[in-house]
Image (cartoon, rainbow, N blue to C red; front, top):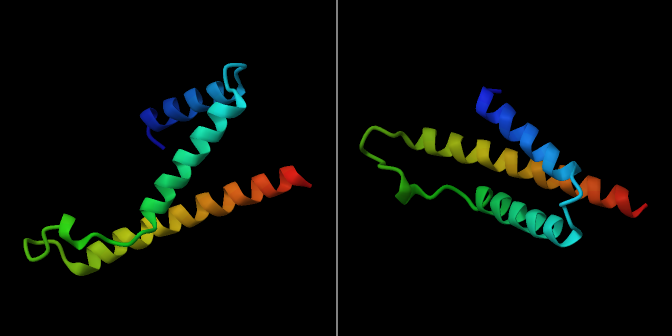
Length: 87
């Protein structure tokens, strides 16, 4: 993880632990996170890549598969956490 990512993680953890985080704000953040993971799992947008201009279809497919895996992992983790809170 690079320095920028570490700083971002630290800032997020501090905000989550702060009293400023209301239930309404947390819900809004989680809904935004779901929008992002949904977008990551929609499938490759081949039009956004210059296919035929040096980018192979395999690269596009690999990029989509990586995004999809990350989206799946985030969704699964979020679901597990929220379900455990209901028990």
